[in-house]
Length: 281
Image 1 (cartoon, rainbow, N blue to C red):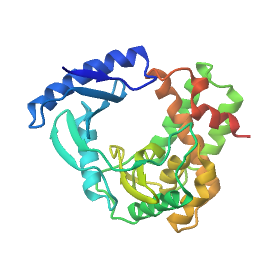
Image 2: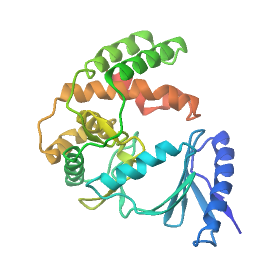
Image 3: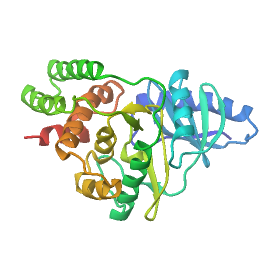
Image 4: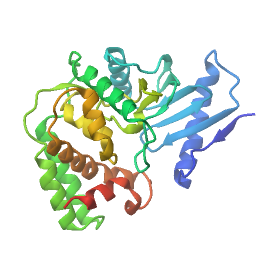
């Protein structure tokens, strides 16, 4: 019997969306040589894409083929452990589960050791020292334009006081300076790095991989976990501008809140990103 095990806390709208996606994934899964699925867990599901877990296999379902092409290419180039690709039948990409546990979760304390955070820093440094991907990434003009749009939306929809948005926008804009591009992950959330003990066992979700500012990855990874920034930088092995890290925290939060609202992740007041924005003085 086929069963769906939803992600705890997923909204009703996402539950329905997840069931539709799970059924589509089941068809793809059963058409492979790994049939006999009895249960699917919805890891994440929204209007753009979804990730499902079937035993020790993750099924990423994304109708944007270009985005999946980037993910596959970035994993092939990355000098750090990545999930094994089991098969690909667009729009489904099947990946083997990584060993270990995630480094942490935004909005919750990380239980990983300082040494694990340092190991994550070393892995990020290896990535940033690797040859650049060939595909284009967003330029400064595009990032600045996107920031302006997001700030206007936050104020117009009364999500945050104009003073909070303005403070964070001024800070975020300091990150928009010329930088030497490196190979970045592009969405290096703390959930996307897995560790076992003090070792990194793999890095997930490479669909935003490309060229960019090294500090953006470091900021994304430590967003909501500033107490681990020094451990991460120690493992990274290179001096970093802490003010620019904070600037990217504001940029990341300002840029993410609308997406979370529009994809049904609840009230903005519950978002860790909003808490970070309100903490900027």
